[in-house]
Amino acid sequence: MPGFEIFGDEERKQVNDVLESGVLMRYGFDGMRNGHWKAKEFEKAFAKRMQSQHCQLVSSGTSALTVALASAGIGAGDEVIMPTFTFVASFESIIALGAVPILVDIDDTLTLDPKAVEAAITPRTRCIMPVHMCGSMANLKALKSICDAHNLILLEDACQALGGTYEGKPLGSYGDLGCFSFDYVKTITCGEGGGIITNSEKYAINADQYQDHGHDHFGNDRGAETHPHLGYNFRISELNAAVGVAQLGKLDSILALQKRNYTIMRETLETVEGLTFRRVPEGGVENYSFLNFFLASESIAQKAHNALSEAGVDACFYWYTNNWHYVNGWEHLRNLTSMGNLPSEVKKQMQNLIETDFSKSDAWMGRTISSLVKIGWTEAQVKERAEKMKKAINSVQ
Ligand SMILES: *Cc1c(COP(=O)(O)O)cnc(C)c1O
Image (cartoon, rainbow, N blue to C red; front, top):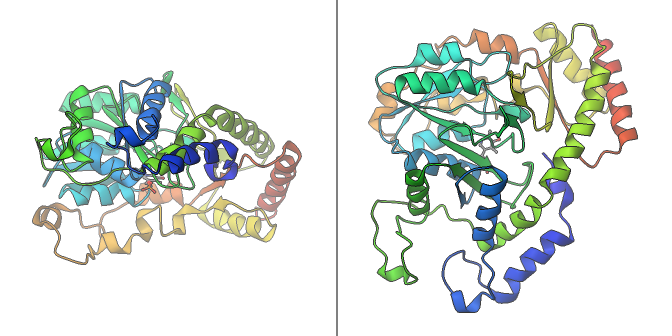
């Protein structure tokens, strides 16, 4: 996920447009800004690229999730189903609203298992939040039919899968709402930033208001605006948005390079005995930001991960023992360790994560290794890397 690999003249030019006027805020100051509206420009271009009616830019992917949930009316005591393999932002955004994260097993897609989702639905469930981890997607068709049957909101966390598609639609645009991160390590970056896409005018208006203190954004006197709802400040700055405008222009060339490098690695590893690839749901196309594969057992995967690092192959991840991405590493969530008192709904309704059986997720995660796909690698470098990976993995099995 290489936005950071390609910061260049295009980004500098966009940022300089903002620096020249000195208008660092996305709203107001019309006379001073030399016609530059970088956040608005990004939103328009991103909505179009994502084949969606609306885009709301915000300060991070985490705030995108929070604003998306809030704009769909999710609040205290509402249950949101999320996977065991994700980034901490999933439960952070849910708990921030007093809503309750319900963690559910993944399957060989490394995303929500639709059967486990169905089993977790209660009368309090309001939303299903699949997370398209490491460049590939959840079985959105199955999840959508569960949502339709139970009148639930489908919110896609596409932070790690920008540019992938499902049934021909950009990931993020299939559900009711889709969220993206433009932090420094994502496919394209704003430095820090996030975005929400939706085809619902109601959610779009709610998101626009919620991320800016509830302002109605009518007219151009902020002091005279009304506040139809309570909100918060999740605004992006004009400087960050400017970086994103330039990066968005590079998205298609990033995706093409990712696909090339991914394919070289995949074709080499295909010949390794006992190695299988993560399942991509029918109708899905990855964004190729990671190559994800399973080894025959947890112990082989652990040994292979060590052998890869000893062989000098960088950017290979063994998420199972990683503190950021898998439920095993979330001590603070399991113990609900917070600085202050948590909402009573969260305390009352949370699963007991210390006792919940996630052995089905463990069985997949314990065997999973992911290699990042960088775009700076030349074809020869990727070939050399792939051969090294093959040798390192073969040496432990
Ligand atoms: C990065 C990421 C986020 C959060 O994005 P930030 O911009 O870093 O707040 C959320 N979900 C997933 C899956 C991510 O990878």
